[in-house]
Image (cartoon, rainbow, N blue to C red; front, side):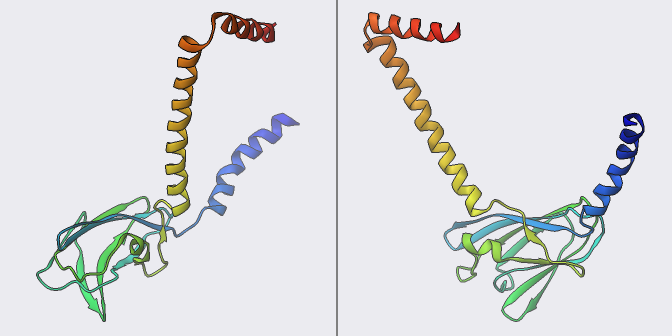
Length: 185
């Protein structure tokens, strides 16, 4: 019975994965902005993690880029247009598993992009709206707290080792070692 069920389950797993995986999944994350004097630079990565082609992908910036005061570098050709108080970068189509990187340098001190506003960038296609794929605030907090906790534990281990080696009496150390050896029996 098991010899029949296992191959049937193995044959059905790809169909189950196909059924539950999303057809459309556009994800973006950003690095920056980095500010030097009046210039700001930031980089945006857009990935198609779905199974369908994302058509007419656009990046909506939170401010308007002034003519001659910005430079855009991209892994694919990009065109820009103004939509009121924002600038829209038309990126074209993204095939499944394809990634596009866009770097923007703005030499305008009034261009409004700050670290907390990077997540407010809008990336849309004709089929869907992209989700933020970068590190969340909670993950960043856990990363920083974990780093400092590791340093504290490492420091405490070094202090405990120095104490046992140089400051603990020989009799107390032998007693502790014998007690640990008894636990192993």
